[in-house]
Image (cartoon, rainbow, N blue to C red):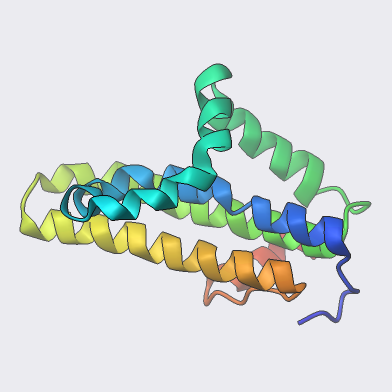
Length: 154
């Protein structure tokens, strides 16, 4: 869906990099998968720069959230393609945050391990799909999330 203009190479790269943030936030949900399948840790290699930022800057998560929301999503001078992908990345991060609040209350059992794995794999699939679509210059249409992103971006 490129009816809001075309995306040049720098917009495509920046839009795809935005999805590394929710993917980094989902790593704790993949711990059971990483224990059972250690070769999956190769997924973590592209997330090392995000990890460095989160470890060196205090309150990096909330700072990045406000910068993305106020300086990118609400700034109409930024390309619609980048603003849409930033908002969609923020919404995926909010879903992960809500899951991180709710799932620990269930304790540790087979059901909880399965839910953790589903959250991680769902985030991995959504971010992977969105990264590929962004690199192609297309809008990633994720059911429910994309509609909310369109409403916020206008």
